[in-house]
Length: 302
Image 1: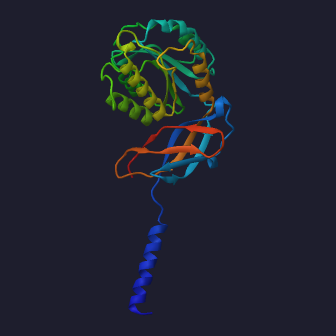
Image 2: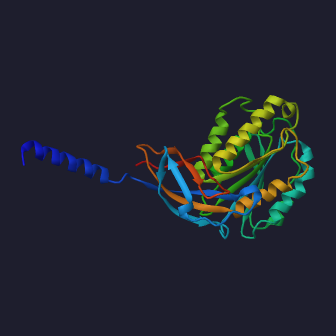
Image 3: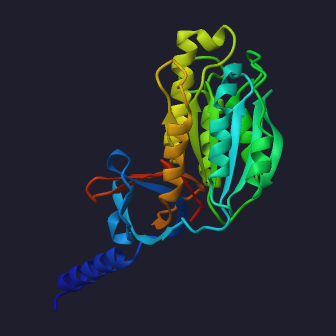
């Protein structure tokens, strides 16, 4: 073989060997919710039914474990203290929701005010005790300061758990601390903190007290903030335009169905040179089935 031929052969072998070296990948766990069409129960799924992509490239799915029998689920009900006091007519629905949760679910109740959560009942499996702790919101305009700061504060103080963690948040979404407009830094921070901690947030819009609670611009952005928070953490926003629902029961029933359709999804993500959030897309090609999960995941450095 000539010298040129040898160089070409060596070059081709080097190219093949570079392509054969697998890219580094790290396992990532997230909670996803599987629902059927129009509220119908979703069929059981396997790893072959889930597609995860990062930068338009498919990632390997290595695990999909149903969480229905999970013994360490934790759930907080957070009520915005700046919500109008006629929320009192809905407290029975919230109490029934807690009472109907599986006996092994730990539930806590807190009120968001002054940028933090006032805990009236720490996490407990005594659902009746948690239900009794509920009270009317103060209905004082602006008392919440920022419901997103309050949520961030709660998650920072929430000890790590091996099971799924959820928040049901009742609020107008209005942020008196930041005001109205796009790109609220407190919303962004609460999303990042929730995604990193694996917390799924379900939001229920309920009007705020005072002048801001009836301001169309504030209501518009408050609902957008709630939608961003829930969509990007794998939850759901429940709302009925700018009016309050006659009953929270249908919303809470749907949340219960979501909790029963959760899976622990494990896939291999590609790390970057620095640790941080990576955008991912989680979906299924199974007909009449929807998969909801976080829009970003935290991936450690390579």
